[in-house]
Length: 332
Image (cartoon, rainbow, N blue to C red; front, side, top):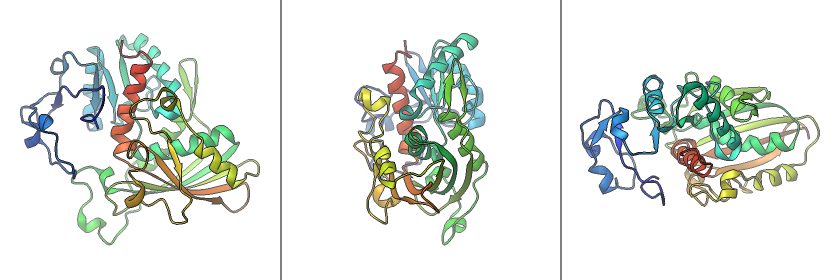
C-alpha cells in the first residue's frame, strides 16, 4: 500500500533480528503480487531513532513487548509513531484510531505532548477484529438509543501472523478461542466509540458480549452482530443509516479513504470473505454488511459484517490515520 501511495515515500525499513539483511532475504513474502523491486533491495536497518533520520512518521508493526520499549524512544526523538501493536492502545493519553469513527480523539496528542514532552507522539490503531465492528456500530449508536451488543467473530488465519495456526489444528476444524481477544474487542471498541471530554476519553457504555473463533479463511474477518435498541427500529432505517455513513476522511478526500466506509449487500448470502474482502473504492478498505434483519423483536437487529483484517484492520487504517494526522497539522 505504501509503494502505491501518491504522497508517502517508504524511505527506511527497520528491524531487530533482521537488521543488516537485504529485505528480500529477511522476509517470507506471502502475497501474490511480487515484492516491489526497490523495496526488495533495501537493507534492513537497526530499529533505533538514528536509522530514521529525516523521516516524519514511523509505522510500527512490532510485537507488543518490543513495541512497549522501542516506540517511546522514537517518540522521544521527535517522530510521529503510528503503531499497530497493542502495547500503548489503552493508555489514557494515546489515541486509538479509526479515522472515520473518532477523528476528534487525535486531540489527545496535545495532552500527550505536554505531559511527555514529545514533539509528535504515539497514535495506535485497533485490534483487527475491532475495526470492522466499530465502523458498523458507529452510525447505529450515534443515530439510535442502543442497548447491549452480542458479537460472534469468525477470524481469518492471517490475523494470527506467520506461520500462524498449525495446519493440523485448523484444517477440518474451527477453534473457538483466541487468547485475550474477547477482552480486547470489548475494551478497545468502547474506547474508540467513547466521547472526548477535555483531554480524557469517556468510554462508551454499551454492554458487549464477545465470542471469538479462528476459522480456515486466509484473509477477512466475518462477524455477526446482534444489537438491541431502546425503541422499535425499522430495518430500512438501519440500512439507510449504515449506507450514508461517512467520516472526516471522506470529507477531506484522503487518498486511502474509501468513498463508502460501509457497503450494504442486499444479497441473502453475503458478505463472504472470498467474494467481498477487497470491497470498496480503495480495495479492502470498506466494511461489507449484509443480512440486516430484526432479531427476536422489532427492538433488535441482526447483521453480518466483513472487513479485510490486514488492509482495513491493519495497514490501511495505519496509513489513513497518518493521512488524517498530516491533514490536521500533527506532523509539524
